[in-house]
Image 1 (cartoon, rainbow, N blue to C red):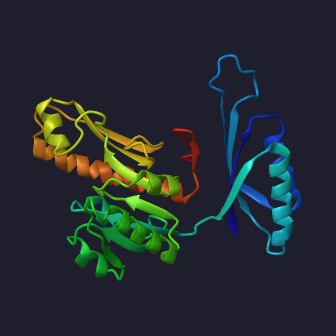
Image 2 (cartoon, rainbow, N blue to C red):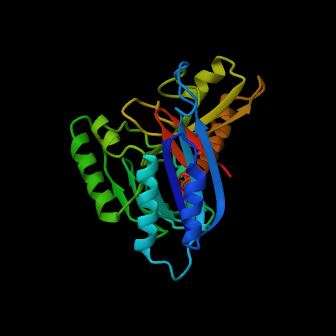
Image 3 (cartoon, one colour):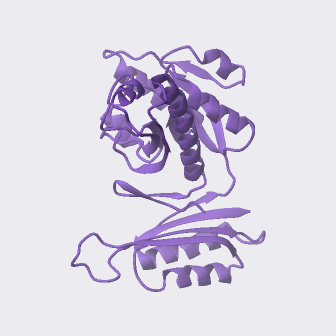
Length: 290
């Protein structure tokens, strides 16, 4: 079995050597390794005062007892004051997709999951509109219609929490879900909700952003995938895609190309997250793409 180890700790000498030695003693083989040190933002900080990020993929020998592995990892974490997590490599992440009327991101994700190019297990789709119900239920995926008004938002979020708990979902994807989640819900599930939107923000907020961008004569369009926080559309960024456009592109063409970019950026962000390649560092991320 392959296991992914994610480590975040204060930068200091001996981190990689210590963990490698402990794994070697257990006959574990390191098949992938990525490291990065984020220097301290304080210009007066001394060398070694930054934050160290590391991702290992290891193979476990069949005879290895889980208690021995846990003991070794716990000892390492204690010595280096490390935040350490593990996940089985290749495991499909239980995921809830949320969508409103525009379903281009939803359909792209469902296709990639069906063709096994995106390591997700879609356990439910939640929407405030019924538009996508036939396409979703045709695949045997439960579809939950939760219309949202200013008067029932708290009740609908409570139902969403119940769906998350019942399905064991570890990720919620806002695949062009056009309702704003409450601060409480966003904080409670921080690091487990990913959103996609056009990259014009903070310009062109609200309805018809591509039309207004066309009216301004923009020369590039793009999309941003990020973790959701109480600060609307300002969470840690995972992935961004952009393309050049020209004066000859109509507003309708900008919309078409924008939707394609949104789908691509979101699917890549989901893959990076599911593979344990993203580390949240305050309002930034460290992403080990390879």
